[in-house]
Image 1 (cartoon, rainbow, N blue to C red):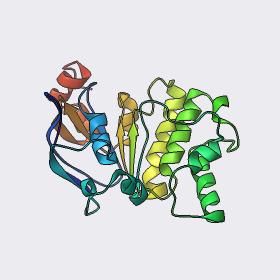
Image 2: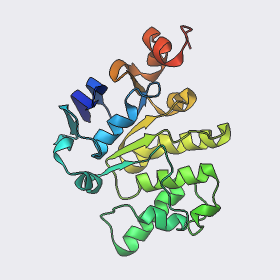
Image 3: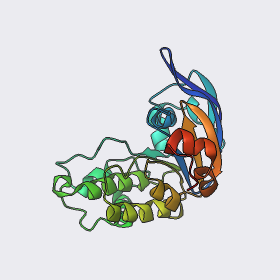
Length: 235
């Protein structure tokens, strides 16, 4: 569904992505690696915030890099960020309704309310400032699934969440492909979340792809345990 070939990104003398070639299939795919491995840079390339030095990205047969960033949003690229983007003074509904949607009127309202319900948020009219951290993260997930997306990028959505909230978040993430039909790519340092949500996972280290395949096998790979998990033990 998404074919990445020879993707290279440089910032001055630093190579953030070094000839990354990978195919992401349907469903939810994991993208993991230590801090600075290039995961967010990859999301920024897909979103249009960073222009690569070389390489191609084809999404559903379309040259994604040839699109302006605002056209990618209209085409169906949605993402969350490591830093919270929800607007505190607006309601949950208004935060979700801000994303582009091809729908209008009653159909648009229904789509927004459905996304809020899908994320498990109980009160669409509550101001975001009244919500806890976990529910704020769910607001951002609801924004990512509203408006018929084709590609959903989740950048460390579970950071700092307790186990119970992470488990609920995992249930929501696992349901995104069925709910929207979108290919979902998840990056997170919580391996239990990645294992629960992702059938396949790819691993970056210093901008290079070091492993990819079924998640369970990848997390047992010797190179992964050394480079990312910091141990040679088999998980």
